[in-house]
Length: 253
Image: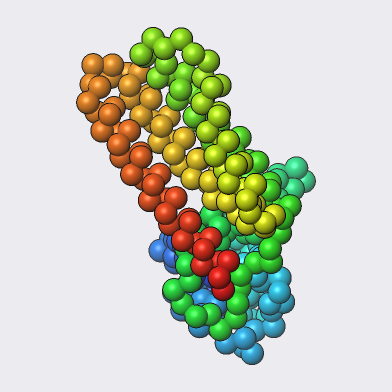
């Protein structure tokens, strides 16, 4: 196992649970010194020569010895290749590099909406990514597609178990709800509604698929299945309430 490379610091968005989690994992895994994990809430902007506008969209890693700064996928590769050298070779493959960079942008531009977490800390620098309709709609289409695969597969398994003779595609009608809601909103608000509903649908769809698989393999334990459905309903309602609150706070800033 390689030792961590000294003199590297990472600047992360501490109002983003995703950023907080994976940078904490870097420290725990010995890839980064604890004192070199610096949040945007505590960063001294005069200390580093960083393109701060770029840093809103791509996490920066600074070589404290040379002052060189790497961003986004290159920054994460710089950290991860210490323990996983093959990552450096993978990222040099053009098609893989293209894919990971696009995936990074998809998550980065939408990270605030994916977790729907209200800011707890007041950052020294506002690292909220620029609003991007294209990346937001790519997220929406991707999540709706994944969610409908989960939900229609779940419906097929449940219809099969209960001998219900309906096409699983009938459940796609659930999408009429966000579509109707969006008719009464501005373009931006409609986009936000679709984004939050799509993300919630992915979570709910995955849980439904898990419950449906349990029904398939444990056909005599219907009580367990109904308990899981109740739990899924509660999780979905909690997500919807949290995300509705996030949209409200965002529109009234």
